[in-house]
Image (tube, rainbow, N blue to C red):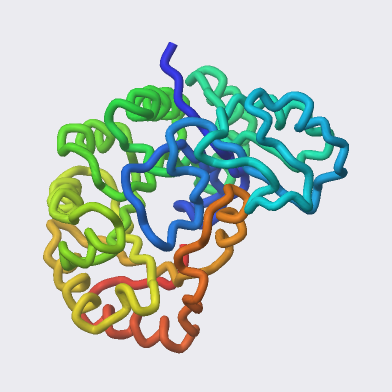
Length: 307
């Protein structure tokens, strides 16, 4: 059976497409955005997350850890004894932990098991005009979750569910078009227009991403362009003007959703034993976001802050 690795299923989501939705977060991403607020999503396999405030110092993790890495709070380690490079990701400590201080993020799903979860929310989709959104990580990653994604989209289509895919667009053209054939709405990230800057902040160039957006604009799928608004990274006039001109040139109208940077995901890095690279960056003010939205609207674009 086709399986995918899911790290979260968020019910009653209202910012990932129209209506009330269930958002399925798939593991794995080939990008390295410095501002990523789901760092647990980047590896394709499960990862260990530690919430020290929940630890009751029972030593259960120490007793079961095969390489002997686990330690209770107070040990000299960023995440209390677990060296991320040596951790086996076996899940033994998380299974033994009685307080939920240690959890494994990510578990395999079959399409059938996923659909059983999604079907529980059918009434909310029907009543609100909502549906299912697949996000990540990056759900459109060849050789990883994409077969699962295509099968899950087909199953959702068979049930009449509205389907959205939140993507960076960093995938082969044929993959994106295959997904488009089963997708009602793309939530398409557009981070930076300059290829060199994109490579510096995101880890890959943007030529494929821009080309795929142009190709998707020729399909029947609706597209919402999502622009994360990161102070000091992509909120300068040159980048914003290039973004507006590019979106305005697409084959069909695509609204822009500005997503102001936030620091909500910062604590997740600590739980993974990592440092947060954007720790000193402050979110843009509401006034600044409003000014940027007004500037983009001058290109005849529909612009929304949030969502």
